[in-house]
Amino acid sequence: MKKSLFWSVLALALIVTGCAGQKEPATQAVAQIETSLSSLRADAEQYASEELQQADHALASLKESLANKDYKAVVAAATSVSAQVSALQQTIDTRRDEMEAAISAAKEQWTALSADVPNMLSAIQTRIGTLSKMRTLPRNVSSANFQNAKDGLEFIKNSWAEATADFDAGNALDAVSKAQAAKDKGTEVLSLPGMS
Image 1 (cartoon, rainbow, N blue to C red):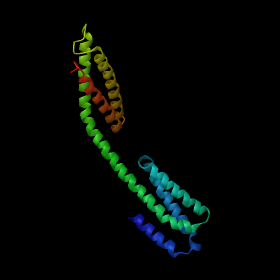
Image 2 (tube, rainbow, N blue to C red; image 1 turned 90 degrees about the horizontal axis):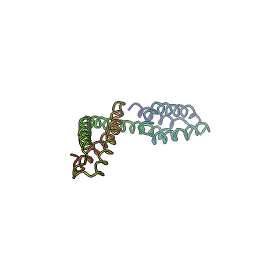
Image 3 (cartoon, rainbow, N blue to C red; image 1 turned 30 degrees about the vertical axis):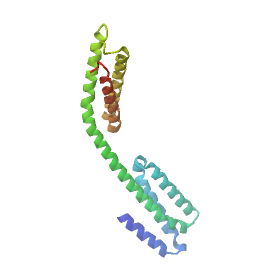
Image 4 (spheres, rainbow, N blue to C red; image 1 turned 90 degrees about the vertical axis):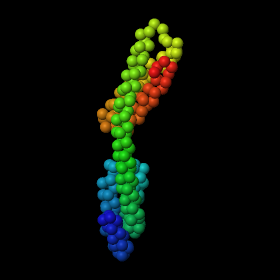
């Protein structure tokens, strides 16, 4: 609200002052926009990199006009660029909120997966261990399906290990994605004849 008021007052002041006296307001406008953009840069790189590039381009254009002593052009464009920086802030806030909601949902999903996947892994390991000790596989278990189950078991182990490492490192989104892949593979393995 204060920034909007500032820019409204600045725009009015710039219009009132003549072109000859526009150097100082133009310089201040560019400095203010640059400061605002700098304060957003770290978050913008994370949440709104494309919009940041557009704002950087607009600021560079303002600086070029200022360097060419085209103060009138700077004054005319400053309000628009300022609005672009304000929109960038709103985009950052929105995307940060969306990311926090996604992480929160992923953490809830992780709770269920961290119970399901190890249980599934244990059941598959036990079944494969039992089948491996037999001289011949039961009629309902083909050698191809048995091999698929063993390959699936390795995939589940690796995916679960990576998922756990990601979650421990604070990356819940990737962790849930890998854990879900492990669970899906476990469901597939358990659906093979003779594996459940």
